[in-house]
Amino acid sequence: MITSIDAANAYDRARPAVSPASGLPQGVTAAAAEFAQVMDQVDITAMGAMNGATDTHQLVQSIAQAEIALETAVAIRDKVVEAYQEILRMPV
Image (cartoon, rainbow, N blue to C red; front, side, top):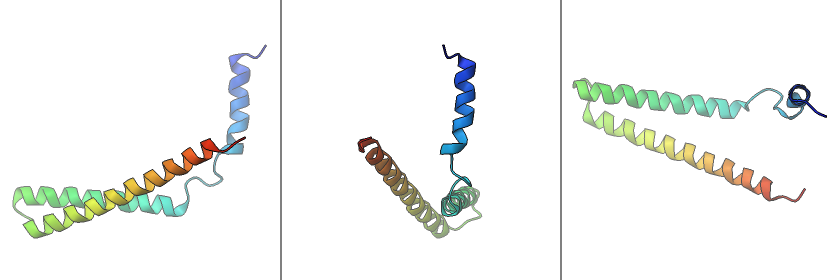
C-alpha cells in the first residue's frame, strides 16, 4: 500500500525530470519585465496628470502604449492556452 509519504517522495523525485532546465526562456522573462515597466510608466504618468504635473497629450500617449502592451500580452497568453489545449488533444 502506498502512503502519502511515499507519494510525496515520488513526486519530489519526478519533479526535476519535468521542470524546465533553467526556468523561463530569456525572451519570456524580458517581455514580462518590459510589460511591467510599461505599466509602471503609465501609473507614474497618470499620477502626474492628476497632480497637474504631466501634459494631457503625454497621458494619452502613455495610455495608448499600455493598451498595445496589454493587447500583446493577451495575444501571447491566448496562443499559449491554444497550444496547451492542442497538446491535451493529442493522442497518447
